Image: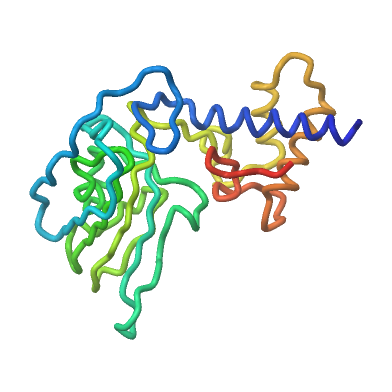
Length: 243
C-alpha cells in the first residue's frame, strides 16, 4: 500500500511539473495535438530569399501548412547540429535537442540567440523539417553568449542544422526550472523543490507526502547523483518517466 501511495504522489508531481512547464497557449502543434478547433489548411508558402550566408533546403513537409510562423510567435523545435570534423571526411554532431533531452524554444523575431538559425526558419510551418546551413565566418553564426539552449559552432567551417518544428506557440513558454532555481545556480536543491511544492501542493498534502515526492524525483532524475537536479535532468513534457 505504501509503495502504491508513493507512486501516486510521484505521478502527481510529474503531472504538475509538466503541466506548469507547458502552460503557454499553443497555436498549432505538429504531432498529435489535441483541441476541438481545427485550424484552416493552407498550401505551404514558397521559401523566401534568405540573407547571404544562409542556405535552406526543405527536407520534409506533411500534408498542408496548418499554421505559418509570424513575428511574435514562438517555435518549439527538435534539432541536430553538425560540422565537418578536423579530418575533413566526416560530419560530427556538436549540439542537439536530443542530447539535452528537451526541445529548443526560439522566438520567430529573435535575431540574437543564433541569427542564422532564425533566418533559416522564416515562413516555416508546423511539422516542417528544414536543413539550414550557416556558412563559415558568417556573422549569422554567432550565438549570443547570454542565451541558453545552443552551443557555439566553430566559425571556420559551415554549421549544418536539421530542424523540425514541433509546434507554434503564441507566447513565450514558461521556464519553470528558472522560476524554481531561487539562488540562480542552475541546479535545484531539495529545499528549492520543497519551496515550490509547498506553494503548489493541493490541500491535504502532508510534510511526509512532500518529502516522499522530492526523494522520488531525486531518485529518478538525479542522474549524476550530486543531490541536485540540473536543467537537463529536470522533467519535461517530452520525457517519459517510469514510476
